[in-house]
Length: 403
Image (cartoon, rainbow, N blue to C red; front, top):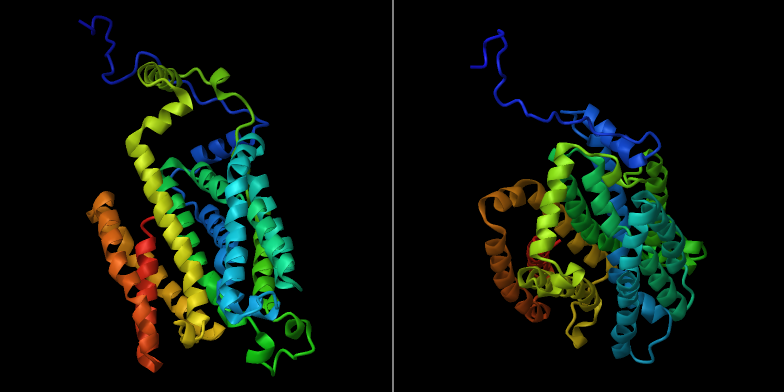
């Protein structure tokens, strides 16, 4: 039937040939898409490294202050009694997240309109300025305001996740998001370790830093300065960051079969679902997932702040009487084991255990770990350090499921 003229019908050949994707020459997003189309099979090592560097740099300031915050508030002489130090420290610790809560949505809108790269660059500039100023705080209100401004200006998290999925080919999207998640988790551990080791350098390393130097007059400046220097390095690395946002309306450009099919699918979805954004609030599985994420994020941040304040508190108040170096040791060890866990063990767990079961197991296992902390002050010496390190590692390991 099809061979009278000697022609053979190619089975599987589409009736409508797919058009090549149209690239706008002046669109940065199109340039990235075209580059990705040309580098099939090429591992995006440079892109993943830049994402890792920026994410870990932006994450370090979040919790780097907690090991020395107790001593900083004490030295600023805002608390009239020792028992009140934690009260004032809580406001400084919360000010960063308050700023993030106010500005995160705005930064997401800015990233969608003007690009991901400008938001990331502004975040790094804010770290250089406000994180450095925080280390030079001469009074309580300066510390509080600079931390709040740092939180307001740090809108990197949403844009860096969007950037990670856009700068790499689709087959590497999951890997790029895993790099964001793992580097953020490591940064939340390494940041406090930096704060613990480098705070009060004139007291810890008198042969290097004198009491009359700037590090003696501002004993909490060195960890902030080191993080700010890393932010400058990341800022320079942003020169090689391509913008990924499309500067045109893609619907008017690409009329290929795939686009038509996607638009038809979208129309069916709107007809069946409807309701726009308000419909999301009646999507109970979605709202349950968001609520669960919020609850675990709350306890994760609360633990990170409370642990350091509790560990350095005097034993007469139920603390461990740790120094900032002791806290740095605990968090550094936790960070090392967490890195090994995320590289070697967690990928296997994620593949073999479904996510819901993993979340439920982690939620149950977290309870006895946290419930054991009030009994730690009864221990001392090497035994105390072993128990605290194990508990800290377990708690941070469980938190990786939600980060």
